[in-house]
Every structure is written in C-alpha cells, then in structure tokens.
Image (cartoon, rainbow, N blue to C red; front, side):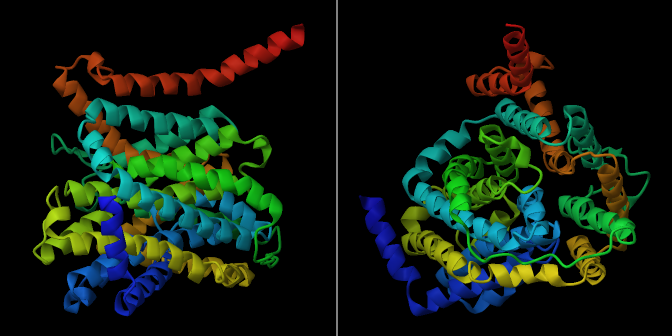
Length: 497
C-alpha cells in the first residue's frame, strides 16, 4: 500500500504540464533518433545530456525515460521496414517484421510493435513497482556459472529455431563468436585477431556488426538482384490490425514481459538475450511454424513486448543497486552523478520525489509512445514506396554515418564494409544472420563468465554446474537439443504402427 501511495504522488509529479511536455519531447526525439541505423537510445541520451543541464533533476530524468522508450521503438521501425536495426535490441524484429513489410503488411508490423511496447512497458513498470526489492535481491545472488548457463541457453535456443538446418545455425553462430574475439583479451590484455591494427584493439562494436550484416549485407544483396528482378514499389497496407492479427498477437504481448523484465533486472542483463529467447519461445509455441521466417506477426509482437519490459527491468538494478545493466542505464547513472545523486539502496529514501516521479513517467511514456506512434505507422510504412535504388542508397549512407558515429574512426567504415560482404555471403549460402549477431553480443561476456567460473573452481569443469540455477538451465538446454530428435523418433514409431 505504501508503494501505491508513493506511486500516486509520483503521478502528481509526472503529470504536471512541464514534465508531461518533457516526456512527449523525449518520446519524439527518441523515436526520430532511434530510426537512424547505429544511433540507438544510448547515443541519443548521451547526445542530449548537455541539453538537460538547465533542467531540474526530475524533469531531466523524465525526459531521459521518454528518450529510452522512444529510441527502442525507433530502432524497431527501421528494423521492420528496411531490415536495418537501429540498435541491438531491435535485431530480432527484423526476422519477421521485414518479411511482413515486403508483403505490404508494414503498417501491421509497426502497429504490433507499438502495442507490444505499450504492453511490455505497462507490465514491466508495474512489476518494477511491485517487485524491485525482491528481484534486486535475487539478482545479487546469481554468479558466473549461472550467467554462463543463461548465455549457453540463448545460443542453443536461437540456433535451434533459425535457418534451414541446425548446422547452418551453428555455423552462423561460430562466425559471430569469431568476430567477438577481435580485440584485447579482457583477462590477459593480449591482442586477438587484430592483425597488428590498433583500431581493432578495442574490438568491433556490436552496432557496426548488426548494421553491417543487416543493412550493408541486405543492400548488396538487393543491388546484385535489381537487374534480374525489376524493383516494384511495395504497398503500404492497411493501417490497423485485423481480428486474426489480434488473436495471434495478444498472447505474445503478455508472454514477452514475463521474459524481458527478469533479464533486464539482472546485473548482466539487457534486452538482447530475452528478445532472442522470446522469438524462440513464440516459434516453439506456434501451431503453424511454416510462416516463421516469412512474416509471422508473433515474431514481432513477442520480442518487442520483451524489449520494452526489459527496459523497465534495467531500472531495478540501476536504482536499487547502482548497477547499470545497459548502455542507456550507464549514461543515466552518469547523469545521476552529475546532479550529485548516487543510486543505491538509500535512493528511495533520500530522493522519493525523483524516483517515484521517474517511475510514474514510465507509465506516461508508454501511453505517449502508443498514442504518438500508432497513427504514424502508415506514415513510416510509406518509406517503402521510395524507389529501391534510392532507398538502399540512403540506407548505406545512414549506415555509414551510424558506424562512423560509434568512435569517429575511418577504420570503422572499412570494417563495416567487410562485415557487409560477410552478410552478403551468409545470404548467398542460406546462413541465418541472427545467430552471428548473438555470438558477437554474448560471445565475449560468455567467455568472461566461463573463465571466472573455472578460476573459482581451480579449473574444474564442475565449476560450471555447481549451482541449482545452472543445473536447471542446462536441463532446459538438454530438452531443447533432444526434443526434436525424440519427437522424430516418436513419429517414426507411430508410422510403423
């Protein structure tokens, strides 16, 4: 009851005309900036941090929250329409969203994403209010073996459900893991696969990899086939969801937050793992799996709701423990410190007006996101009516701008082109792109957690399975690997009978 009273006082803060205007500006700016490939919500918040110097802390963080949610939805917009993720959390949306757009259902895909963000944000923020202390306490007890087990589950789940074969899925994952090895070994400081280049010593940023594999690879693929198949304008489609779309989407909208929020609250969490797992779950639960890979709306609705809920979950560790679990949370932590405020267990006692005003603004931001972007879905979808040579030329331009903006080095543009050629080759030989991106994102973290676990156990492999949580996760991994074989064996026996 006390939390409810504090939340109501937070709404009193968030719904003032000034704070409401700041939230709306944040959502719009976040959406527009999130649309640019490679410039996600973290960079948007970082770029706009100096703008908020003249604002009082509560107003600044309410604006940050709007930018966060708006940036995540903006990233999914280009991911769906142009197969060009604006940030890593929007990678999964391209798998089903882009085929929907190619079929003239871009508006429906964007509407499913907008409602998914609304449902995920609403449920995730509600869970933030109710469960923040409990989830934070559980997150502290999760160790290196548990994190490694979770990442192995993400690897297996995604590579098992994507592509025409598991072999190609694991081949794509291997490509991503190799790219993730580039740079300095975090434990020994030795260079790996840098070929003596100082520019590669810091590794290859995941934004460059995602934009290269998706945007540049897709553009090169289209360029190779334009002469054989003349470009035809893609229809925009209806601007609303039909009864069948709603029937197929409402369960993923509700399931997504249950996956996204706990992962977002983990000290090593974020939106990448849960969105991958959400897609795998939706494909497993679908009655008709044949549509997946060709525009299944469940593959947009579930991951987008998951991503939005994970954004609320990241605030659990950031506010209660002072641990930023994503790049945006890290920038927000720097902003807290800029105002002389230190997030942690005492923050709720020392700054109740700011904290509960921020939490209430998350509810306001989700509503504004839906109200502002649902009507804009057909407007965004009209991007598809641009002639394809001009459209993909623009994609390459913004991809190059986004890659250059990561660190301001020309070498990043060369890396972007090389990775784009790898993406083209993967399309040519039928390798799914998503496992490669997953390998780049989670590969270094998985290696680090595995080595920590082995150090704690003096090199014994039992150190990877010495907690109840890790044992449960590995049991799930075994089920994921063995279930298709067991199912095929059962069908053979039934056919013999």
